[in-house]
Image (tube, rainbow, N blue to C red; front, side, top):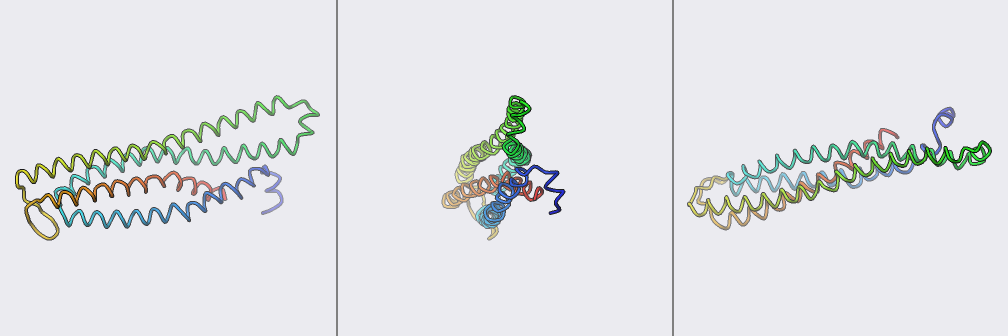
Length: 218
């Protein structure tokens, strides 16, 4: 980096890039991306198995998948937005702290202690607000998706029971056959695993946003 860069940027801000931002990138590459790849492959495999067992029940699952994706887009998007602000606020606070410590003698000579404390509280409050919002949206996403998955499980059980009771014809990739209890039980297990897979993948969206924010700063 050119020397003027260090004159125009607080040293704490630069060190935040070396520590927080690079750690966010490491977490993105080492955890989030592999988790998304694993979840994507698992999702495809389970979805194909659902089509193999019953197309009718798979259509019902698609409706719940759409709801899950909409909730993920709304809540994870809000979390990602505040994650980016959190990284910026964190760098600003660390830069201010470093400058205040380095210039402590100057602050005391000019009796600037109270103004320095007041400015720190403002920056810290902004960091707290961004972190609170980022974690708030991120933490409520998983319980909401879990409850949607539980609701999907119950509705699929009811639909499957009705299909068995009325002797409905089951349409699947292998052909046409009667709906059996074995098909319903297997399908319910796959639906549970599918909802858990979507939940695990959705939890990575805020970390991905934080990693991208860190990469942008780097």
